[in-house]
Length: 635
Figure 1 (spheres, helix red, strand yellow):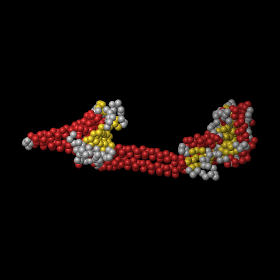
Figure 2 (cartoon, rainbow, N blue to C red; figure 1 turned 180 degrees about the vertical axis):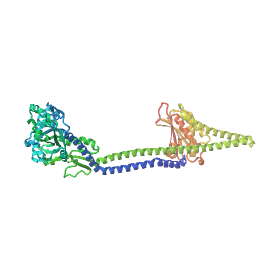
Figure 3 (cartoon, rainbow, N blue to C red; figure 1 turned 30 degrees about the horizontal axis):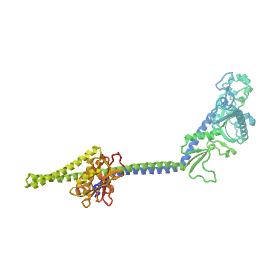
Figure 4 (cartoon, helix red, strand yellow; figure 1 turned 90 degrees about the vertical axis):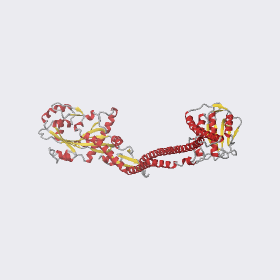
């Protein structure tokens, strides 16, 4: 059997056009967008790596600014605390009259600000042996009070000695050349980064008194009643914050300020003994202990969680290995000294501790890992899109190929039907005209013309019947019955071989009954024999071989020829409707491409299986395998 590639000859142009259109509309834009995305990622990666040192440095600056803002907020809150709060009880400035009204200091009755361990105060005029007053707030645990009071009192006394030894504390004696007049005091305040304030003399006298006898204060308070109009000028310096080591080598953070109280202006007489401190002025030292863990650990860590990007790492220790190990080449790290940034004084061993360092770092590998993940996502997306585009191209080409094949079949069908109709119609017309015009003079000729008219009519009827069979078999089913396949096929072969002798039958033993439709078997056998005669040129010397045998326990009808065979790529297509190899206009074999298609429809309708294989020794072999009466299914 010969099946060429003429049916696909017209498909090349359509497939190439569809491929070009697909590439133009989808592949090229997708490729361009993919390239742009890849290039953008490369540029972003290079920019991110080049900007990493600057980003780390800027983040460290932002972190320090945020810490400094919170630190200065604390200092400012303490800066504006009145000096009389640094007493166990004080006389409110709003109180006037002859009665003494003392209220507890908020440094004892209220919780301390976050970051403050305790407040302390002493009078500088008392010298090295000045008495220190400590204020621990209201939120300290009772079991810790005594130990903490003892510890911090000793530290505060050390500070008194340090200030005395340094000789840096300003006192009224150091300002003897300065006139504390209403005009000069503001200038002094600006020069010392301090603030000046005037308070009523009675209020200053009570809150500066060192007298511990309340009765003495209460009895002498009326003497100040007539002095309400007199004022005392105070000068309060900003806080000086120092980092130092105490006698036990424990690091401490201490903030101190000076409060200079001038002698009252316009005082003509002497004040009572209980209030003598207000007569000649005094210098107070007030301050507080900063919580080192809060300033150097908790505050930076809390601030870093919101002030620096998540891809940067904050730490209190350097991420780079200590020398002599080489630093990590991929690590970008900057450090800041909180003491330097916050202008905290350090000296001696405290200056060498380096425990005020904070570190901001970023590993180049982390940045590269981010872009590696983006690259992997890009590749995954590209693979998915490529698969989608490839699948789309495959489906498009298959659809175009199918459309071209269907168009070719339709063209072949039209050409075949035209050819098949043309000959019998012409013959019918010819013989009809000859009979009607009386060309046939004798009875023998008229009988011959009648026979030819009948034969051509049968040919037309067969053509119409096959087209109708196709429509019927596609929309209906049949109920197969058990039949003696050998008897039926023997009868059919005898009819097909009559007068020609080009069909040979072989029935092998043990053939079982088959579930089949007799008319379907007849149609299949006739179509297969006709197909073999048409393409294999069968003769009595090389007949069509029809065999009945059992294959895998099932009866099978096999029709073989010795023609060229069926190419592997066309074995599924030859059972399609109107499929015929070659160009219908140049094809010598008659037919419209429905024979094998009808055979496949009949086989499917009765539950049989029809397929084509190579015949041993050359040629094609069509096998039709039936179900048996026991209800066996196809295998």
